[in-house]
Image (cartoon, rainbow over all chains, first blue to last red; front, side):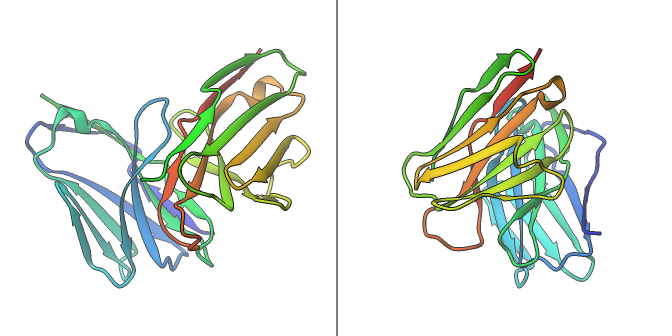
Length: 112
Length: 118
């Protein structure tokens, strides 16, 4: 069955360091992959979308890589700040591209 | 960016009553909206796809008579939880693809509605 896996353990890092989150998927051949941020009690907010023919994408302090051979995406936040503390969700389009399926998310804590 | 508004943000109801949640696209037309459900520390689970002017498409295991979806206009979709029970207590979130009608791309989410059934 199709599965999206994100590290369920929270990630704790010091302010100023780079946070790296992992998303692995199986039994998928997605045309694109997305990352969202979710704060407690709020709806997710879109961050970045990377297509299957793109290896890397950047937006300000964010960087996403997409390796379709390894079936893995890495999400990096450089120069992390306490305000970056949130849950980060990986999402893939389903077969056909119409629906979006989410991983369980990884909680990030950035300490000042 | 596209704005999606959801109301109410939280609701408490008695077991056996029905609750309606509204989802509006404020600055774009959304022919399709998606309803998700989220339990604490768990993933967003897609419940159904709401299509303007036609019946919603429900995911496997989601009771369509329990979760009524109506998408009567290009900017409004509603989810009604009928005869609610405590196990229906959850965080319900709607979303829409940005205006443009393309089948792929980012989702814009509402603020979510926290339902508590006593």
